[in-house]
Image (tube, rainbow, N blue to C red; front, side, top):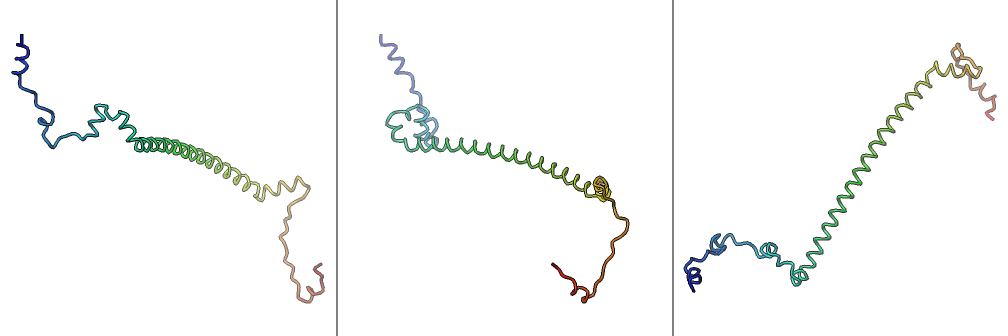
Amino acid sequence: MNKLRDIKEEQPEEPTKAAVSGKNARMPRGLISVLNGSFLTRENVLGNMPFILFCAALMIMYIAYGYQTERIVRNLNSTGTELKEMRSEYITVRASLEKKEQQSQVAAGIKELGLHESRVPPVKLELSKKELKGTSTK
């Protein structure tokens, strides 16, 4: 009847993980607790609460930073688009103003008012200081 027990006793024991891998390859205690789930016990959670809260705060700040960065990029893109539109409007207005300032365009504009362009060049009047004293500047 004890044949089963005798067979078990005769089999050589399996070497432990520490013996197989040697002393140098031992896993850290923290990693083992994460892998087997013992870090979720009440005592460990309460003991590590400051670190857990710190990690949660870091995650929230990281997410907020991502949203802020996206908002800044969107603002930069819209500002760039607005700048391009304003530059093209500036070029258009400048070109139309230069065209309106041309001598031929001014002459055509004053014709509509009933004025005409003088073909006689202007004459410079020269007065002596005596003549200037006799005039009043009022």
